[in-house]
Image (cartoon, rainbow, N blue to C red; front, side, top):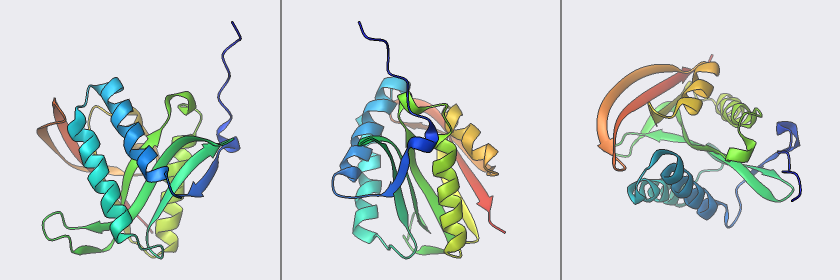
Length: 178
């Protein structure tokens, strides 16, 4: 049996813009990993699919981006930065971006790739003139919460909910950009 292949250093991964096939991969990997690691139901994959479809339908390359982390042709992670919108009216929230769908493949975790993806969002948001970035996550996603806290995000609100077949605590985080 050959020895296990060591994951590449995070600097070896290239962060690139999305291209055909990537959005489907994002949906698939979120669905599979969150089911395996957290017991989330297909309702989670459906939510990711709706977010991804909205991204494609409303994509504004001057204000929004998707990054795919790739190493030697293998996708290792993703993150999206979009114009934040009011959940009820879908009207844009002035000067506010939203970080969405951060994912790092298990083989690439612990290598700093998540930090790189979050940093890329922050740099892009600053360059585009956003004054803050918001995000929504669940309390049980400890690794992601750790990344956000380390990047300077602060928890602004939390609420218990029952989603994706689980009793969860949803959290809203925010990063103010200077």
